[in-house]
Length: 136
Image (tube, rainbow, N blue to C red):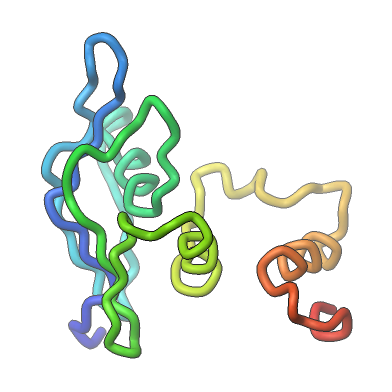
């Protein structure tokens, strides 16, 4: 561990816009340093998944990040404002810079399609410039 920050979340708040609104995450700050592994632990329903989804810009309505910032500190020295990324920038960012292991990770691969075909599909989507040979 170098103490070199790779991800910083500051004062993140997330609400579910229902009636009445539910404040699921309130003013959470954390720093993830290079070489560290981050695990979120807490009681069921305390906001762990909501926070993780919010930091990765994966929230779906009625969830909404109401405050805070999430900054990715690239090795090149560039800071990337994750909250401010446009759709195409966000898609490229997720593929190149960050990943998340979801709770239902065992359901991520289709058991009736071989892994090579599934990974080929990922490369076709995220690396269209790759040749067929490189994808295999």
